[in-house]
Image (tube, rainbow, N blue to C red; front, side, top):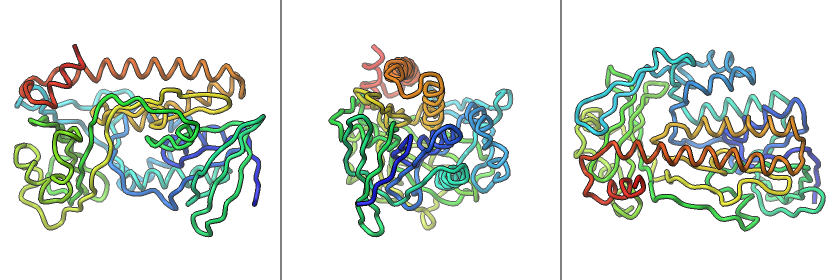
Length: 366
């Protein structure tokens, strides 16, 4: 069995893992592994303006800006039908960090993977995490997807950036705390509307979201709880379009279009947290540590920010035990702040307060 050594092993080559790798590569030997040969199509396209600060700090912003209309397009604002049938416009014109970036999520993750490779990060794509053991260092067993060869990486420090699955932490027996049952069912289609602002619109049993992404593509997603609507009712384009008829704003965006819709299925969108986000020479970042309701539009930014928080701690304390307590405190504070503001925002919508979806959100607030 082949064996390799590295200072830091990052499991997960999504946004959190790549940002952490790029941020640490100038100080440490960094190895990045991901089970996918390339990123897949994924919902999650609104990158908060504050992310520009991180991209600039890592010298990524200029290269990304050159890919305008390929990887992202500027989003002028959000039209919201929340708490009222009257539209409310939230624009980004006065935001000191600039506009929201509406991403082609797959293209953005490919951009970050390429940047990590250029910074000297050792990358193993299509490589699966199997198990790990700790003595004085971590010994992590991996398997190459192509040849099905098993090999080992010895690392002084491990970062779990494997998303909601938190595969490294789960292998250690650490459980996730689940706050709700939110799921998202999503489609994409060519955009035909002149107005390219994002849309958020509440409905009887959940809420809708839509955004225009590069190459004139529109993403539409319906969010509800997994036990309120049978999954079988959300497994086809036709069934999702039936629910869309209940919402005037989304129906208008669809404009009777059915032939060019690409159905992407159902994904988890609930709020969850690892019961332990850091331990002996390891830390979880991004969705692996805490996952946000898409309503917050903070998931990708949190992935990037948690990677940068970790870099700051490692620069200050090395791989000492101090990181575990400091990082845990930071994540706990972020989580509590997030839950408070999520509840406040859901409480604004009172039109369907007697239906189960909204009663649960009101109950959470109380």
